[in-house]
Length: 274
Image (cartoon, rainbow, N blue to C red; front, side, top):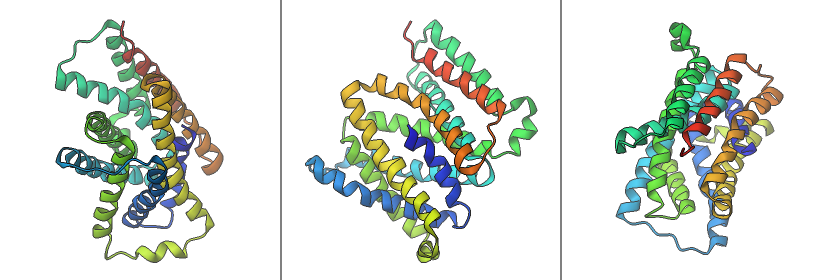
């Protein structure tokens, strides 16, 4: 959760000097390379069939879209805000998608959770002044939350067809190839002219905040169960705000703190079954 939270500050640092298409390619390329030792020690043969390929391609498109909007969000806004808005709104949006698609019957506590989440969202996004929201970077973070809800649903159903680590590896490879084609005419080698701060942020975002953190999450899910492991995601907004405050000297905005807290409470009620 600390690594995931710090990823937002790392992305903010990368936006200072380098174009978006260059960053996206190197992020997914380094992520793909970093999976190789993990795959080697897993000793599980890589497989990919038609069913799993559909999930890989779909998730690759969504992951690329997520990266674009998150880049735009932190470029024009605050890294800490992205680290609060997305982890708190995405679970609520995922739940709403499931309810709409599968017409799930809700418990009383889940109705309460949705209402609290709605209030929290209004406060986070300052929807009391809609013109302020429309001119802020938060709209990119909301789009990220919507996309992440779609990624979550795809990931859930992909487990029936492909190992989670293989799934993440294939997504990074497909995203690397797609972003390379898009950025082919850009100066991809310009990253080697950057200093240590850039590369620390790039390695943190690509390897630590993605490959290492995701692998730890999968291992924890196997040992603790998905429900207990997922509950630790409540720490991501806290780490995002604190790291952005320490590393980027970003102010901790009161409306983000209050709205984020309400959204976390909403996620708790939504996950209750009584």
